[in-house]
Length: 123
Image (cartoon, rainbow, N blue to C red; front, side, top):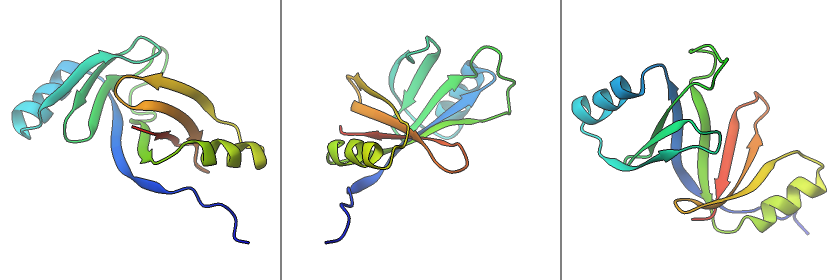
C-alpha cells in the first residue's frame, strides 16, 4: 500500500517582513493596486496587513535585522490537517501549533530543509 499522501490544495498567501509597514502598504496598494482584506496582529503582537491578492505584510520581529529573512512564511491550504499531523508524528518531525484564527481556520507550521517556515491551514 502506498504511504498516505495528504492533498495540498494550493498556495494561499506569503507573509513578507518589511522595515516600514506604511511604506510597504503604500507601494502594494497605491502603486500595484492591491486591496486591503484585513488588519490585525500576529500572535507575537506585530502588526499585520492582509491584502486580497495573497500577500501579508508585517514588520521584522524585535532583535531581527531587516533583510535576514524577508519572507516570514509560505502558506498552503489543505483539505484536512489530520493526515499532516499524523505524518509529523510518524516521522518524528517537529511542528508548531495547532493554532486557530478566524481568517485561516486551524494551522500548523513546519520548516522545510532550508529552514523556511511553511504554514498548512484548513480554511
